[in-house]
Length: 345
Image 1 (tube, rainbow, N blue to C red):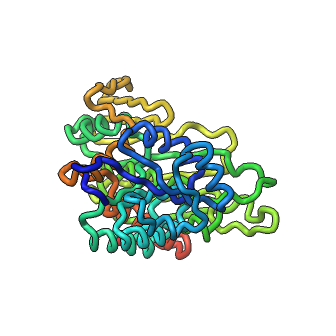
Image 2 (cartoon, rainbow, N blue to C red):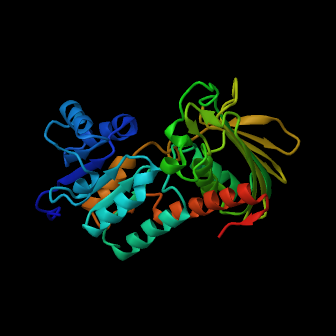
């Protein structure tokens, strides 16, 4: 990569240019004058050309993702593909001296996540990061502050629900998230909310899980990824949790977590990004999110800053944090199959 003092240009090659890249990442990337999208590999050469024609006319449309990961005119490999490609694309990109931003979830399973993490250690000069969960981003710092200050005392119970009806129609073909070969052990929003809860409450250390398939057959495809999942968990601080997920919930309520403590209750509404706090003996009241604690989406800017300036903060979550939630995802999968409580390790 050319010296930032000479050029201040970050050349980005995109692997997987679907809706998440177009809607979530591309507007911010294109708004930065120091960013240049130079290469794109989508699901086919035709789709790569179509993306470039509409969104990046100066970029080279490429058929093979491997050729983006090793492209001489690329500094950063931006992986927008589904989880099956996160590990191999990351490994090849790092081996070719590229910084790596990968879409969440980190990988299909813990073994792949471990390979990514180990590769990042071998190349510490390269910036690596996973797309963070936007869930709870706005008020997360307030939640952490309230818990740390003892606003609800010692946390003892956590109840989280994440329900939707996206898989409720049995006539719909299997979504890519329902395909083990593509999504691996990831189930619904499990990994997303484990990432969030780890930030707020510390690590989950034990899990027990039960799941079910309401519609195991979708056309000619036999689904293995659960339609719904219930997880009992224990946090390192001793709190116990019940985490419930569903893709087949008719008239689902909005995603929410309730945190019970010895002195009160804290509720976060992930849809509205609102916080309620109730003290012992009092009513639940709205908690404002101060401007100085409200976090907004600056993911693309944070990553580019770290690439341009080695002294800038490294973006989060990094691969270590990804490993932390992937350990839980793996343990939940083992607990589902075995029916036994599993330590997270």
